[in-house]
Length: 193
Image (cartoon, rainbow, N blue to C red; front, side, top):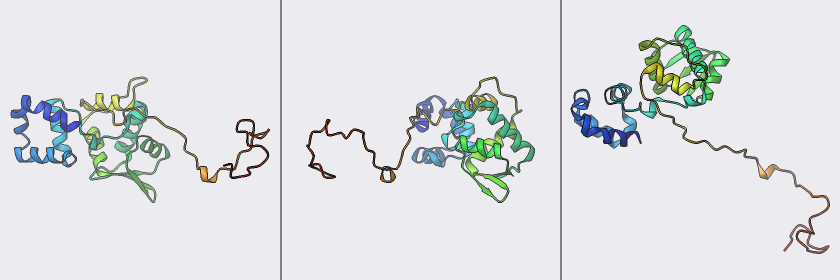
């Protein structure tokens, strides 16, 4: 979808795009859109109003703006920015990361956030002023307003269901027995043919 939007805008903005992305590199991006770098995706997003590549986003729409703001403040105040973001283990931060499905892992008493996600979060912390979110603003619209970029939802529509383990379920018996629904008489047992 991202690549299709880039192809749609290409004829209109070709001169602008070629000023910062070589044509050979552009062809490689069309071959495999997941190989786009964060800097290229950011420039494309700013210059031609293309949404930021989904590779650098997570499910921020599942979080509130206040939760994302809390996460960004924790990273700014206590985190180490670099290829990966490393910050001290805090329960509420881990909960927010899990809610947004951000790839991370806990090592001893530290949380490490993976490289692709950390690039976008580092950009927000270093290049923007962290403003408080509006009331009832979801995380994605807050990040979009904060960054000035178009950000799209990754989730689309979500349908969830509870999945049990039928092989571990106990047999259920009806009282009275169900031979009224399926009349088989008094015979049959477990194999009701």
